[in-house]
Image 1 (cartoon, helix red, strand yellow):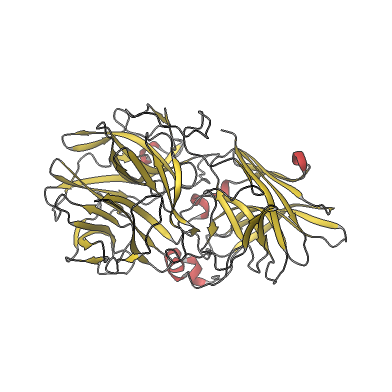
Image 2: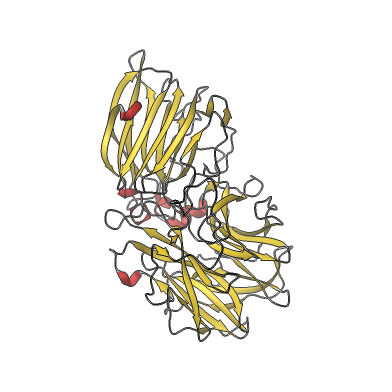
Length: 550
């Protein structure tokens, strides 16, 4: 069976394309580096990450100042032997294209699209070889439209320049629709189809479609809109805020839609963020019908009519993609699961036979650069980020389950304000940390469990830090740090077999976008910081375990 989500954890805004028997998906990565993970499959069931599209500083400048800035809504397309990825970097607000002959890379340096004054760009290649840009415009004070609209223009993909004046192809299905965005254009049976998201990316998200015989329009809105939404199912349905879709056909003629959606836990909480789901689609009277018969996305579907193509290093039960559960850094480099938060401005991570070593940079784990009035306005704050030359001493990967065991074996010495350990982070100042630091008593270290909560009613950067538990323990050559989660409630401990429990039943429900704001899902990772002080010390992690119970 297809098991949803096919990409678990924070993999939003999926875009899919097929080249022969091969399928590829890319996702938004916001301020994480490297950016735009790319996945490959031949059966739409089993997926393997083959790289990141943006894996060099020359391609991607993002910072930790605001996690929900950075890369928005990439689109992947293929034409005449070349793969194209187009996206928006909100850290600097630039639309650009990169290209590759192999989807695993390397991808080119960015080709700016300077006339695209909006977000969520897409490319469409027509039968005559002409290329068209399609994207969201307006709504940000960027042009004459105070309401977002969808614009199209012919484009030279080699230069990024428009070769026609842009024209409006739609502004949503509802009157004064909220956030018409994420557009994609397709052509089938002589019809041009415009697929968009609408309603905002939270609970009222939806997918709308219109069509025209001419790419210039006018586009006829489908009376069956929305063709996909879960907003009418209420807040107890376990899959919520589905939307921002892309479609693909198979070599056998079947059709599928991929879309973002979130799984719920403990009521209406979604700390894993927006994940990638897939569902079947058919056509009736030249209009798409998504999830025929029941109209909503399910957790399982029958396999497509494609040869099964499992990856040999994965147990059969793990049909949806998950990253390796155990990584021995003393023997191998980290997997593709790992990301920095922001483009690393400092070479602070190294690896050798001792493990993965993080230098204790001065930057603290809670950024504070933008406290003040501007922090209260999400868009103003996001567009102002990107000035810092600092690096956050963090290295992490996506949480993919509500029930997990995370464990790291760490060696470090501490003085002053230095600290290192495990962190779960979402949206700047919303964190749970298990950290070790210097103790007042010689020969001892202090172990602490902390919760950091951002008050979004005051402003994005105002936060409260609470010590949930602490203990002075004897210094040791290494420390085993464990965070265990049961239904998104955490137990934080130090030592073998959960040795000393610092805190238990710590709710992680505040780590979802419905409370924390922003667009990302929770990460878990490793950190080492001087907390404002220059340091020559390091923390070395011999191994990392992230074992999902489901």
